[in-house]
Length: 400
Image (cartoon, rainbow, N blue to C red; front, side):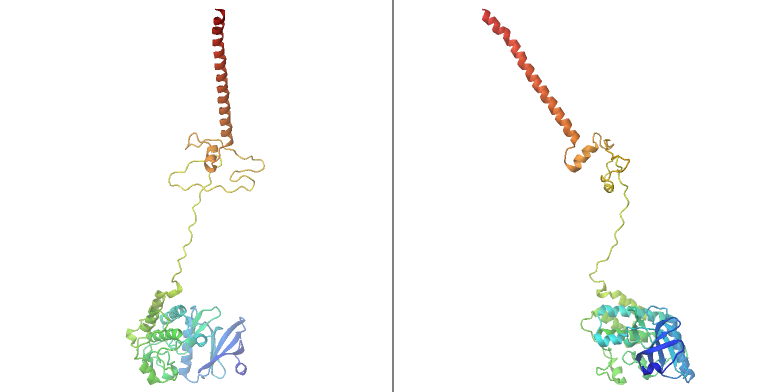
């Protein structure tokens, strides 16, 4: 906490150190006016020359102009301490950097790396559209904010190139593991350099180490420049199409490289990888068209091909589908449907249930009883008639 007490910035309460690099220290602080936790970056270099002031203003204006992008670390404030050291107040990213993750996890999954590349390439596309080149893209400068989003930070080497400007930088200002080969020749910075650095960063996230850097980690410019002339190897367990996209972004000749960060973003988006592999597309169900319920007093036959009526909802008062309640008796339909002459509602019930209606049973029994009575009566009349016809004959025979 000694470092925290060594500085005092009006309007901020410094609570500790978040990180330290070659050019400055990043503190954790609270912005008192809005009660917000922030990252306070204090540069070690005193602004003693006009060149230093222009450099600082480039970083502030570049980052500030892009801080509305969802994948660029927001810049809230900037100023100069009494001792001449500049400071900048930025969005706090408690998730650390991708370099921190790489040290713990060794390698990231291809789908996540492609997604990171899409987001950071989109941020760089916005920067290039505003005339800003980042020139220091690497895992340490991609942070994870409090919402889990990756954001591009540290525009300390950013520039807005124009004829006659102070665009070139010294080799000491570069990050050799991720710098494009043309940067070692101190050529004029261009957007193609950011394309290379982003490709190298994504390659390192997949493989665990930069693509063209000595395995012993010792910075040797001659060795690094020699490695730039060698082909970029494949990465185990990484889809070859993803490696091919990154390899194209890291072509040594800038003229043959992926033409822009927007093109790199689109190439990564077209891969899709396993983010959507095997996942069926979710098709939202179509809302059913409203069908008016049938009248409880009249049922008609639907036309051919028309959907049948849905059954009426159950009534809370008793009989399902039939209005009832206090002051209203259930309706017993006896009307004949116009589409089926001679078919009553009772017959429609029989067709649905398979049981004869009670009224039909009574009619059947009555007809059967009447037929039986008539049959018995006819038989009785025949017996009486035969008996009457045979009596005189027998009487005549006796008299002779």
